[in-house]
Length: 111
Length: 114
Image (cartoon, rainbow over all chains, first blue to last red):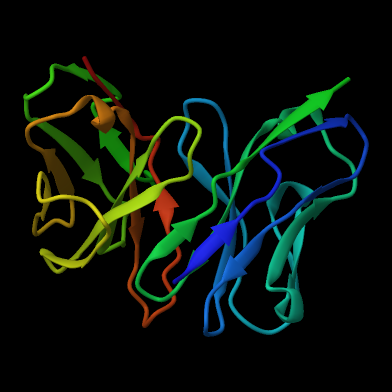
């Protein structure tokens, strides 16, 4: 069965520090992978996506993610976090028919 | 270009009642998916509509039903509401291009069942 695991429920980082949010997936075929961000009371905004090709993908707001097939991972990174990045982050897998989301990682940014 | 819109923003209902939520997709999109997001959880897929038919369905009971109209807008209906139906209901639209479906989400409808 398809599944997405985000092992970190909550992460706190200082403004200006680097960030890495972990995502592992379980899917038998080549996955389509996504990262979304959700601010309180808002819908989900697409940060970046991986379909094929270069395993390092760039997204909006300075985020990037790297697809590692051998580790079944798609970790999200940002070199320098801004206070406005505080939000909930969701990793998702698209099997072609359905999206499966992880349970999310809540990011707190401290001054 | 308006993105995905949903109405109402918030809704309070009593157990046993019925509710209808509405969604207008992004311009040019023909597919609508509905998700339930319980507090502290990731979105759970309810179902997807394309060409006015339900194409895929997640693990939700028949109390959850939907409809898609010729203009691609969609409704989600929930009958016999339970306390556990309290959640943020998200609508996402996409343009079906083979199996590569990139979704755009609306702001959601917050449903509270008392």
